[in-house]
Image 1 (tube, rainbow, N blue to C red):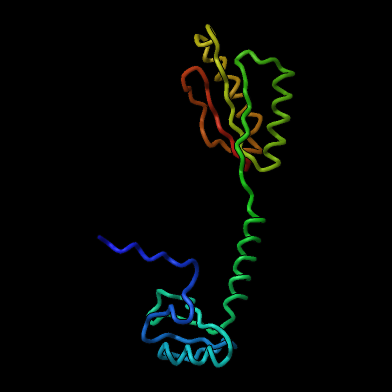
Image 2: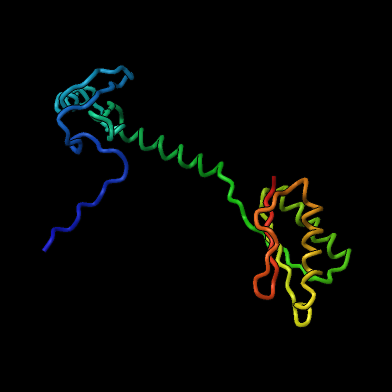
Amino acid sequence: MKAPPVPQKEGPRTNREIRVREVQLIDSEGQNRGVLETLAALQLAEEEGLDLVEIVPNANPPVCKILDYGKYRFNEQKKAAEARKKQKVVEIKEIKLRPGIDDHDYETKMKAVKRFFEEGDKVKFVLRFRGREMAHQDLGFKVLERVKAETLGIAKIELEPSLDGRQMIMVLAPK
């Protein structure tokens, strides 16, 4: 019978959780106090009414700082939320084509493609062959070559046209 594993705490260790003999201490003003015993560093933190927080646990000795841990966690959460807000999720939009697509239909689809590229999304072209169209795969390849030529200035090819069963697939990404 084994004891259940000790749950790992999220974030840095604080105060009594720091189980090393010596730490490199940075005080609340940001001044380096040098290497001190952990108990002495903990006593300094308690005198200031703050917490001893392990900032760099992998250093030898670990670097600890005297600060308000609640305020520190709040600021870390704000930074993470700000980073998530600025993140752009790239979507893959799908455009379905046929080998015998008419000019007007083709132009309408290309307008949509250009709009997708302006928004920063990737575009996946799926060209489906039905029935006897499989005998004329060269027509489908010509349609995708036409798309490639028209989007040459605004997009780069991520996946060259390739046949996958009864459909031909090509993926373009904005430059």
